[in-house]
Length: 326
Length: 258
Image (cartoon, rainbow over all chains, first blue to last red; front, side, top):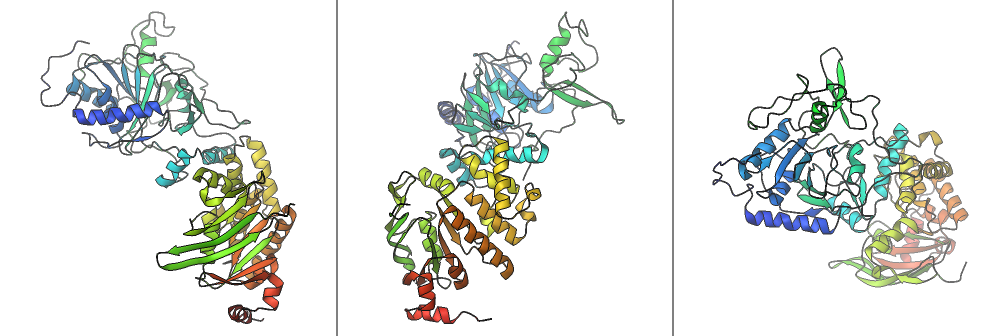
């Protein structure tokens, strides 16, 4: 993790100019002061398309300092295109140390997962958010949704959950599951699986959310109440898996389905690659007893610019995410 | 029942620039009373209704509503939050076009349940039971509860809209041409249903209609409007049987006899 002595004179530190960073920091501070409230900000063009994390990148660029250690994950994985590109981007424009190790990172930019390893008060989690408005698919008018937030009219959010139960017999929303923050604002936790919702509740780490295309920033300060909405007779539940991770045998973690061949072969593995690797490399690992060969493979941290091994994933990098459009 | 009115309207006017929406309208509405506002299109009926239901702010005049605690509150001085709360609890608004008053992409049950959830009901089973009860009261089969209103006929949509409005037990319902666009047999059944509900629940209602037959069937009292002004008001039977203003006479004599 030694900082390279590359010349970065062609960029301001962290790409954005200082005025922009101040503007974004003001939005972040306002967001922290009003937990869950969506603060409009003047989102900039970034050298990447919308839908690839321009909001998260701007937030990270505004809070990152030379001493920070950055980790970037994309659906839990450190080695997918989005994560590798953003990590390489910050390496280039800030020269900060990057890592895949959850515990040693000070800033973790994430697309759609919260790491399995518990976060601490020294860490900041930055979410990439495609659609920040939890009411959007129920009420298309921005003027109306802002009014609903202002007046705390959240009956409509439960209409969606009601529809789920009426159609599927249970609350079928599995990601972007709406939460109420500090008893006031209803917030979209970005399309994280609802498995991660309980991790947001009273988390010691500061959580920042950036939506570049929609030009909104919101925040959950440390130790804030984050309650998933539900019905008294249909309480909130997280996903459960009936088998452990096929690579590291972890239970009670979020698993991804990996397609192995064209004949229906598949397996379920940890979505958090760092967590999975740590378990496999630990000397006490029940399955492997040592460093894994082949399956998955570790990330070569000495050459962060090299082309990463594409992880065997079913889902392509997103555009606006697969939220149900009603 | 108290002998105080539910709604007091005094010198209400609404101007759109130099054009008159409605001009100097005053009346009282008592609990359980149905008031019909009739007149040709463009006469300011709907403007009046929108002002009363606070969907529009009037240019001048006052309207005060007796809240459930018995206190009169000046409608146009309430905060928006209070007005919207009133709108979804103590009031109902039945639109001429059901698509304006319904959420067309969520099921009938959720349409009825939305107001309950908006006032804090968080028990799915209870919400659903109430929805089933209300659907049966407006003669919609229970097995249609999970269908979207898009799959409903015009008459069913209108009945669903009525159920959605009445589920929180409002005391005052605004109706804008509730039977407009429905064929006569469906109209007749809807009117029958409305009459029953209004009597059973002791609702007060302000019904805007251009159809004098609807006014005759539903209302006890009526106001005739022309060019934004009230030209005649009184008991419905009196106005229709013995119209005094020349315009009302014209209106009554224009009814087609079958």
